Length: 435
Image 1: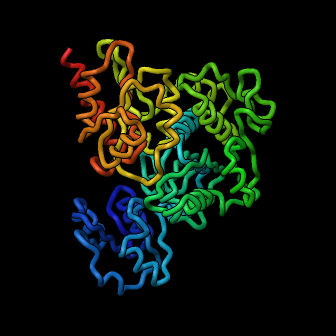
Image 2: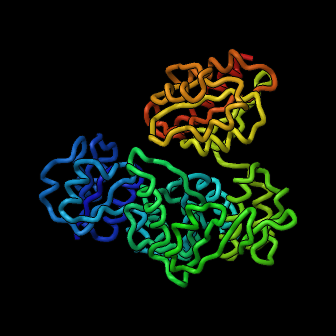
Image 3: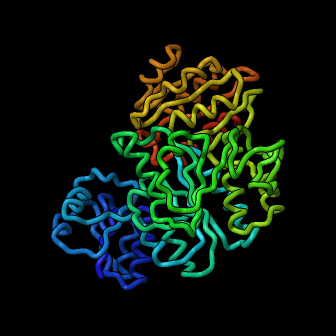
């Protein structure tokens, strides 16, 4: 059997190795130089880097897998699709090789927080349990290392990854919420939403889907679910609901809302989902409550960095949509100095208008800075995130909040939101060192 792997990022390397372990003849190609080329070739992988040779289009494959970061509009991908190939994601292929107990989480916002919470709960049951997918390890890495053993997995999965799935069948799945995102890739919001709904398409009556009754789009789009449906809501009658300050799974009290360290009603909803999944996967309720009380959040998501001269600095680099930045702005009453901008995903920023009264100032950077100027005429335009931070540092007074919440992807100036967030924290700590 022959497989073509397109893209040598982490998941591409992982699936190439996993396929090789499973007796595939593997060809890997990347537009960039592949640093691991020698080690891949040593294990028998044929590597074509710094371009996709046209000869690869003339070969026959039993399987084609691409890195989720490579757009389906790529000419090379289009040429393969035109030959009738389905282009898989590594999660789809790896999931066929094992029988893990998978809880899969997608949605526009909140995926990483919910997945991280669930992972912490699952580890209270068994330290070997873990999170993977669009967070941390590629799923193929886990399968290659662990094999087909008993394992509970919290999986964050993005729309790009779901596009490459056709038989992926998690034991439990959910769509946390839906809002326009990645329209630069999907073209329209309907295509993006349809991709998200692939998370439950292969589930059956032996599986569970958690439906968010607070999201009208989800309620409307998920009427074709074949799995057993459990509903959750912050303000409606649902299987998982709020009652007298507690999150309850039917009649079972899962955790007390006041015990949560992570703030905001959006995080109550995230914790509600994580706790319900953990409960369904056999985690003891006392362990669920312990994790809820101890969990302080995830890196790059409204992450408190430090206080300098009475000014608090927050890293919300994971806010790659206007909806995420809206949540961040609602977390503070006023005196916000907002640093925003980046790569344009064509989703617009009008949703932020009702919250602009909370701003003391805005410094906009990157490709979208002019759009932020239109949104907030008092915005100051700068070139880079570091420029924005330096300007904010100069004008901030005691009691202010300097908030990096870009509302945009990072690709115009950074490799990813993690790099953007880490650099922002480094810049802030450098300013702190001047005290």
